[in-house]
Length: 342
Ligand code: KG4
Ligand code: ZN
Image 1: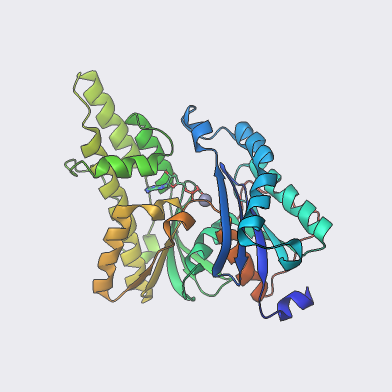
Image 2: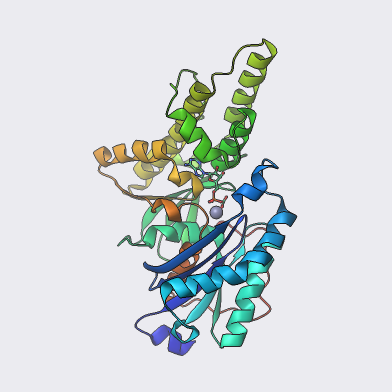
């Protein structure tokens, strides 16, 4: 381990299997991705309208060996080139996480490499370091299927929670609204697509906090508003204006995020901002945050491929954890369905 800290360059093999993507990446020094392989199960789960945990675990088991092999081949590395193995240990679906954790433990043991456990949430945030010169401190808006939060990234290891959702996460709301509109899983990209052809004609609820002390997110009211709107129209036999509802919902969802981020930036005086998690791929959110430059802010976005689940972000997070003195895990490492946000 001491040897690892002293190395001028560290190459990490990272594994991610917390939900429905089996992923492996080879990452050098936290910012350079040598390969990034993602085997997605979206098509398998689509017919059920969402991820079925048991099916996800079984498909991770089928995919993981080839995914790891392919990541090494694409990067042109052998086991001698790998300095450490990193893996997402939580949060996520327990059975799905276990596949990645056990594979990573086996690799670390067989190859005599140190093993590092990475939180999925820190991984999403670290996606911002890939191909970028971003350095803390900054504010990060995390919006995924499981979380909506604003955190202050004080340094590479210390993250402070400033605000979070009281109910549904933003991504969860995109998925549920898509479902009621008859669009397939995952809902985010589908709503974005329909919204391009629609007008934000419906005035949807946007909770707005007045100060950082009572800043929170809430997507349950917005989701319920759309469900009631669609059911009401269906009962009256009206045609559902899917594109206009998608555009109105997306606009309200994005406005809530933008309002929260602006408030947190003004209250803390921090002008360096980043976004992370699946919803950070949203084109309207990116467009809206581009306007923050006018307030003197510098906004960082991960590349689209690093917004949704991938292993490169886990390799990036592991690198900065190692450089910050993180302890390696032993073979008793276990998967956790939930981990603290910070
Ligand atoms: O980060 P992620 O891949 O997985 C979790 O850790 O949850 O996020 C998945 C979420 C899903 O809810 C999906 O609908 C949403 O991110 N998402 C989007 C977009 N792409 C993915 N939401 C809005 N717009 C998008 N373009
Ligand atoms: Zn995720």
